Image 1: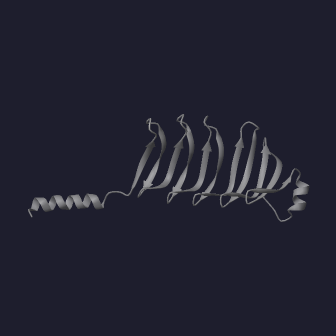
Image 2: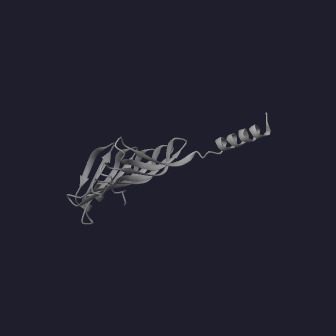
Image 3: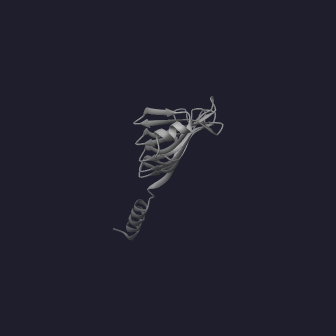
Amino acid sequence: MTPKFVSILFICATVLLTTPSKWYTRQYNASGQLLAEGWLDQDKRTDFWKWYHNNGRLASEGHYKNDHKSGYWHFYDLNGNLIKEGHYQNGRAYNWWIFYDLVRQEKRKVQFQNNQKNGFCLVYKENKLLQVEKFVANKKTGSWTNLRDFKRDNPETTF
């Protein structure tokens, strides 16, 4: 082997071994429209990502960890209005989520566990609490429209 060949072989091996495993990518549909953009690490989604509606507006944004949604996410309608936001852990909804009903001008704060409504749902209109609902495994198990009755039925609960 010639010294020149050995040098070229060494350079090629160095480049292959030092190629970064993490890179920024953009994904497009068949007509060339941007669908998503974010970071990949060894072909798994990681860190911050954005997803887009067919009209080009932002549909959702948040973080991934090991190809699963993680942390706090925001979701938008076709007009760019925020429609929901909340926490993910290992790709599953958990903790408090907020849902915005733009037509009825209501906001719902809902507790999730294991991708299901589990806990309370607080219904607000114009920043005034209208109703409290209770869920177990996505099924409504109670509903209150006044604080006195809620406290009577749920004495240990505080928000």
